[in-house]
Length: 543
Image (cartoon, rainbow, N blue to C red):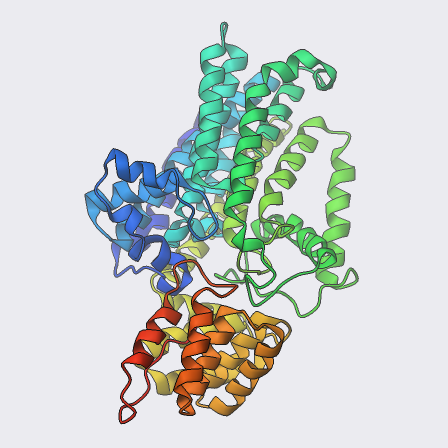
């Protein structure tokens, strides 16, 4: 067994060096139109000097429908030391990822030693599993996208929570470790709320270690009541923070409850499918035109999901891993809308797929020739590393990212929209025109936000009359909507009806559906008041 560990000891540094090699070549930029602008460049909260007052602000603020005080604090620390540097942010995330892999290996080892103390090859299996997890291209988004950094921080705190809980089981007295475990759980949710159901993992560890009988013992629940209270408070904060994200018109797309359940079924199996066969990875996965139970993707996901569930029932450890994986996907499943609606995202797999490592370790304990399987695992890890390097290069800058997404899915309207915005912002309007025309073809048309998106494309294509006709129609159904009033006001302004335009701008200032912090309507009032009819009209359109 020492020989196998020695071979892996040489392979791991080589794979890690190649995995990180893209960072030897610059430049690396923020993805401004893909949340990095609001999370970093325009985030004044992280650019303040680190004082008790600024830290208090982080712990009392809600930004883009999330409450992540520790993630904001990490951003502030990085900014105070290294400045507003996209390259530095990615290196910090890479460091967190390395720490997570190390912690994951030792947590899996400790868990398996607790459950299977006689297994001799679990260490090799955990090492192979950790390497595969660490270099997997499915996790590149967390490292390559600055705004995904909270996922790495949340996993770090989650793994520390599990470590402390395992020490709680091993130690007597254990109150100190139990308190630390609870504190790490709170910190993990303060980093990223997707780990809200981490206590389910604590429960599963206890059931595997002791007996399912503890589920019927009130003393057990009393001992773990701290997690229940913390989870309730954190869940309430999470729901409060996401209030704006659940609105009917929070995004161009809005799913009915049956559609949400079907989407959740796809998300249930999506990370597993991508982990086993990571192809066509990209920054955005477009929703299918229709969600129907008989659609192949939906139907196969449902059948496979229930098949895995049935097969794991007779194997407690496998069932526990499957249950943890499934539960940790619930917050990102789409059952509750959170801003943008899309099919799935690579980052969603970062935390649920940690179960691969202990499962791999347990599987090696049953093998007669683990050396051969370890060699195959290394070959697979080497292939995954190369794919990861290629994938990481696509996260260098916005244009590369968006063009890669369109290369994989040419009909992705959101990728088309982001690319045309980038081109227009870069004074490449001529190049943007065919992109806008393609976006107009594929953009959804049902709903308020969808119609606003169509009108936006028409405005950019200088088809103003068609766009204004859409705004006028929308105004009849949504007379108080900020976007509709502001944009229709611009149409009136262009027609010379200045007074009527100003009235609509005033309605838009306090209108419904107004994005927090959007001052476009107020600016338009100032512009229209100072406008000279002999000069061109310059106004802010609300998208």
